[in-house]
Length: 62
Length: 315
Image (cartoon, rainbow over all chains, first blue to last red):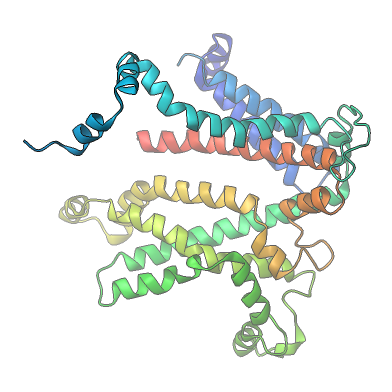
């Protein structure tokens, strides 16, 4: 856990990519889940943040 | 002395042009070759994308080009993301995606595994299995509507044979509970061969020596399957899932032909809904916002998937 936090603080690609991946996956699940329309409403912004973050952090050093 | 085709072509180049080309640097010549492709990409992909994003913030209607175009900010996005009908469409798409990919990967891999075994008539069976993939989706949609006919459809009679139910007692494309499965079955029938071909390429790329070494170590067939076959075919399986996932996310023709999005809205997938908004209701700004939402979703998913694929390949 400390490694991940350290990686995030030092702007390393691995942990940031993991965070972006989690956000994209969460956004897609929120978009297509059949349980709460509130989750559906906020799905796009979560996916968008994750996708933009993924594009940016894929240029971070390893 | 005979000249090579390249030398012949060079000799035929007019002197003026030849002199000019000789003056170009390698970098300039490279740009001359790449420029048409870049121009095409910009014109066909990048410009429409930027234009769609711009339109998504307006109330533009393509059937009323003379009307004033108002900047509506995020209103189109707000409407889409609070509309229960669009939410239902997303759920129908999720149902279609999850089940088609699961069934196609399971059946496709099983078929590839069986076809990969050496037996008589192997090539003939491969051709027969691949046949549905060669058909047009519109044709497939059309003849599955006949297969699903309650009175004359072969599908109902096959189900009746195994279950003992009356063939006319159910309608695959007329029942709200069965229609989503009707499109899943038709798509699985059509595209399983594609997954099978990719898996077959993966299975044929595994060297026999690895299995021979496993045999020497007395590894059981089951063990060989889980520790050699599956890990080595995994990149191919993932590629198949990526291709089918993206294709099925924008599935249109087969479903339109088969159910037309009905009964009700039970088989209205996002691409069908988007087409209705854009070209039947002519809400261009709204449908542009819809398209941007779908684009970001597919782009995000494809990004993480390609990353996962690269990791598997590096192992």
